[in-house]
Length: 90
Image (cartoon, rainbow, N blue to C red; front, side):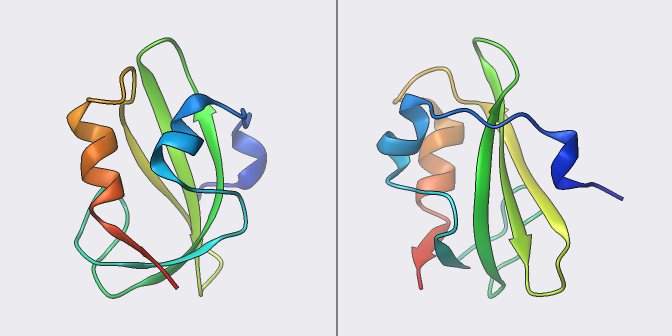
């Protein structure tokens, strides 16, 4: 089982580019990573693993930790665009 303590969160440019802040609530509009369409989630933080790979961490209503991992190295990366297109602010 994943735990919040498994991550180190960073205030990276990816957060402003995705227009996402810790503790914001979202409805998932399409499946991506561990997130399922129709689910309500809260954004917890961004773990910048290295210069290319990172993990956006969320929690659902069942207090399960969910990940969207990918190559978030550029504002034009498909991973970042896919994430932005999969979330609707609640």
